[in-house]
Amino acid sequence: MGALQAVLKNPPISTKNQNVKDRAEGLVLKVLSSFKSTDIEKGVQSLDKNGVDLLMKYIYKGFEQPSENSSAVLLQWHEKALSAGGVGCIVRVLTARKTV
Amino acid sequence: MGFQDLRVFNPRPADHEKAAMSYHSFLLEPISCHAWNKDRTQIAMCPNNHEVHIYKKEGSNWNKIHVLKEHNGQVTGIDWAPESNRIVTCGTDRNAYVWTLKGDAWKPTLVILRINRAARCVKWSPKENKFAVGSGSRLISVCYFEQDNDWWVCKHIKKPIRSTILCLDWHPNNVLLAAGSCDFKCRIFSAYIKEVEEKPAPTAWGSKMPFGEVMFESTGTAGWVHGVCFSDSGNRVAWASHDSTVAVAEGGKTAVCASLTSETLPLLCVTFITENSLVAAGHDCYPVLFVYDSNKAALSFGGKLDVPKQSAQKGMTARERFQNLDKKATTDSKEAVLESLHKNSISQISILNGGKARCAKFCTTGMDGGMAIWDVKTLESAMKDLKIV
View (cartoon, rainbow over the protein chains, first blue to last red):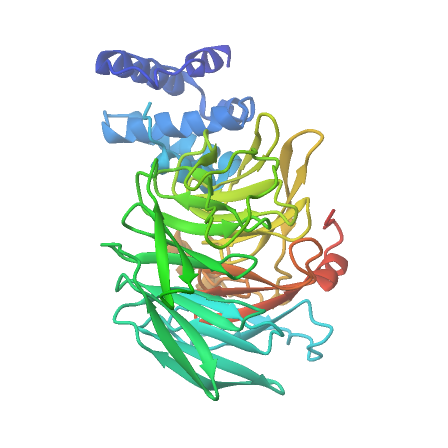
């Protein structure tokens, strides 16, 4: 839980360095996959509105490069984040100018 | 086994006077834009083509009394000046026409806008001596009538607009103009034309207002600004943005901005109904109330304004359950049918009675070709938690 908060703090949105973004994305994915399925909901609840938006951005970024197990985990996170953030959250991922 | 309708609808209240909302389906095509005349007996609208149709309310029917054909492209904006009874229309053919009623027919006057892309929206100023047109050419044309040449002349506001202007609203002082644009910003410009008016008094947004001056520019929200609206006093401006947010800014020494991210699809139009309450509607097909608290500079969600139809569901047979599970991976019997009044996105909201200070009725039109009239008092009493401050 603490790891989730930490990894979502200070996202590399403004940096032009693609490496930094990739490393941050990898870290987030690791944290997301380390959660137990039953704990995912609690994890999402512990985030504030901006956190949920940010989480959704990472989830979609993760969808872009699927590895063997990542899509299943991400889909579970997606379902919980959707019930917390609603459709508006996804719209904000699509309209965001600065990507994670 | 035949197809079974899984719902039983209770009929709406027949008494239209007491209904919280009434709906009239004009056409099957979307209504691109609409405008009401002064006493709200006639509505001018564009049925998604090059014409403007004017309907008159006779009894409980709407009869088409005029068809205005002059544009060569889709009509994207209509505004009806209540006092001078003139209609201004603008379209994708890069033109605007001012229509005056001569006898029984509307006669157009061409206004040269000097734009090379489509016009997107048009609004008369409160004193009706000017109107502003937002266009895809990344500028706003402010037009006024030059008496000497008997001709409409326009001036352009170009800087610092970087993309199409989607929506406009005038400040009550007839000089300031709020514009929402596809470059993700809502700005307030001065549209002061010295030929037709006196120097304006200082406002909450500033005191020096030469033509084209940017009095306020929003930051923080991403997404195209679809709808913009000044409050009745002009001290506040609200805008709805494509990233599903609504924001309100209050003028002052430093402008104070408050925004609210919503969980719904983006909103397309927004209007103040009192100094503190806004109604907005958009792709979710129902109007929503927002309340602005100026002490906390915070915007909050007030409630959905669509009283849903009462529907009872018949029990599902086992076969239907399995069918649903197979087709939609769920045993939920809710069909993909919208429960709201409008069956497609709402694109425009207009105030019918009471002005922006104490709105009593407002009207919405949308892409389903229908127009709905909402009564604020009845809505307030119908929904227990709704409070319009």
